[in-house]
Length: 153
Image 1: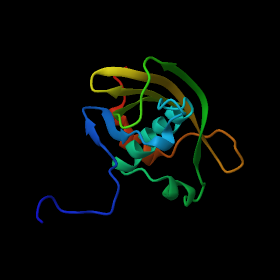
Image 2: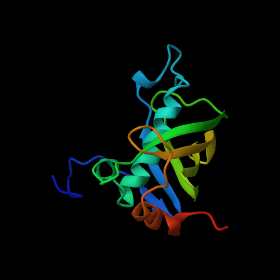
Image 3: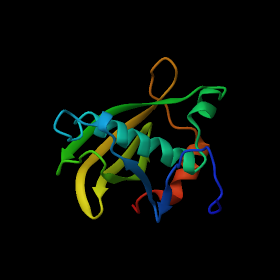
Image 4: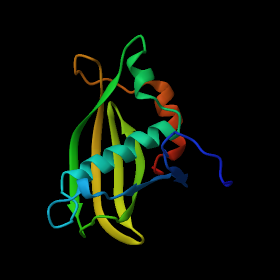
């Protein structure tokens, strides 16, 4: 059997302009007894979108933990609006944009769509922290990788 080269690496999605897109399939385990996605799972899909965006542009959480001043991220605010129900077997697209960095905060906009239909959207604030949980500015190399993808001022 021939075709596209095979890889064991999961997809990290792709960039369309400044928007990262990650395809997600809804499995039975993602749903409640009615076949509708359980509400807390949307937070998981949004997290995958943010993390795979980083991975795709060469930002590694593991590398940040190995810096001389180790760095991590913590979510401090999520505004989440549910618009439509997603169901078992749906193919969704998690759409993520990193909008800006303000001091230690990263501002992120996210949407989940099924085709052109909006399923859920979120406004997220993450904060860069040291290993004691204190806020700190993100590493300069991270900001430089994201800068071309930020929203215009």
